[in-house]
Amino acid sequence: MAKLPRYLFPSDYMADPAAHVFNGKLFVYPSHDWEAGAAFDDDGGHFQMKDYHVLSFDDVENDDAIDHGVILDVSQVPWAEKQMWDSDVVEKDGKYYLIFSAKDYNGVFHLGVAIADRPEGPFVPQEHPIRGAYSIDPCVFKDDDGQVYCYYGGLWGGQLQWNVAPSVLCDSAEEAKVDLGPAPDRKTQLFTTPDTPALPSLMARMSDDLLQFAEAPRRVLVIDKDGQPLKAGDPHRFFEASWMHKYQGKYYFSYSTGDSHYLCYAIGDSPYGPFTYQGVILEPVVGWTTHHCIVEYKGQWYLLYHDCVPSNDVTHLRSLKVQRLYYNEDGTIKPVVNE
Image (cartoon, rainbow, N blue to C red; front, side):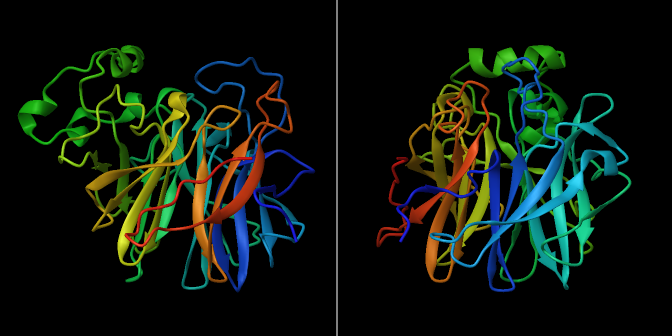
């Protein structure tokens, strides 16, 4: 019997897990770290991932992972140049859709789509990215009625602050007239005005063919118990790594706080929110961000995430981990400890 938490794939560096149950097995879609020799910077320039693998398990607590190999390489994507960051997969009508983030030849992050006949891939990319989908870290959530929603966005190197029109982030036309300044200044503004509302992640319902957004992106509003949006200076505000799951009819939006390194969550009554902040699931791990996913498999809930312990955090190469996740009677999540 394995001791949890445990590393899922010690033979290679993987990060940013997205886990789903397909055909009775647990499939994990991570990003794939490698030592590219790029200099470390706050915008993630050293994360030069160039392909995706998929891992599968019959028993995620004890079995060795089955690595199904490369399911998509950046050289196969016509519009993408580099930095294949986080991805997620959703099934519909027997097809599997990989929603991924990568930089185009102008250095801008977009979300793209690739399609496969099996969860193991290989995935065939679309010629163009999703229209109007910028930034990183997509999570694709399939609700009980079959509707699919994409949650996405990341600050700093994730470029959310550069590519989102002010009108998307505001509640009124008057508020939308506020000048955010040129793109390079927005990163500084976000963290020098701590009492302003935090910049939220975005979400949109996807079209029936899962190739585009069916609506304009909306902000994912995280509010406190008084109904007020979390502030930019709050260490528990959104930074990146959106994840959505459902438990007992409620929608759980979880995310990484980035530079403050917490894994937090909020609960709502609709996939559109708003989501009321609940607390911290996981304290900071060794490494940059606490990127994660939450999944139920064979009657047990699991938290998957990564840290940099095996690489000694020298090169910021990350390794996947798993541990059990539990709920309190009121539906709140019991915090877990990384060991």
